[in-house]
Image (cartoon, rainbow, N blue to C red; front, side, top):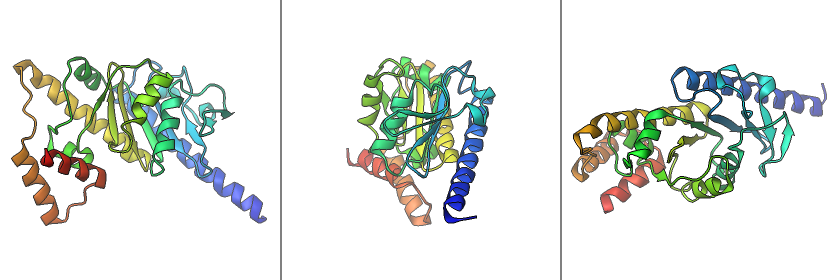
Length: 239
């Protein structure tokens, strides 16, 4: 095997590994209620900078390797048929965030319900979500798949690793698929709790003293916290 063949073989092995990981995440999203019917989408950035993304109009539980599409960073279709209609959001994320290698978008019901109930996650509700994400903004409604939505998402990408889209769900990003999916679930978990207690008329977010105590504790214990999450917690304390 010459160098060119070896390089191609390595690329295909990586491609297939990512494809299989995306399929696992798609099925997990369906099994856990983050998507219904043909909703939601998942993508990964490939070694060559192109994007492997789920197709349009296909149930996530049924996705196979052959169904996945490859698009360019500009959104041009390179292989496959029709990529997810949300490809513009994925392209915007990869353009702005060179560190992001995976994006997961689910139509998570409690996150959507919370956006309709105007429940805010700018201030953390749970310590686990605070340490993983810091805070999560809600993006005002824009039509799914539109340039307008991609542009709205892009405005928040430098500060946040997860976003709630009003009436539409959650977008979570990370340097690998597992972490991106975990962030999606963490947002939905917090949204579920917030929605369930919203019947009381008030959602008791973490106060400044609680956030400060938590930040000091993790520093003393040497507990690893994503830099972006810690920056957001410091901004909360500075207010």
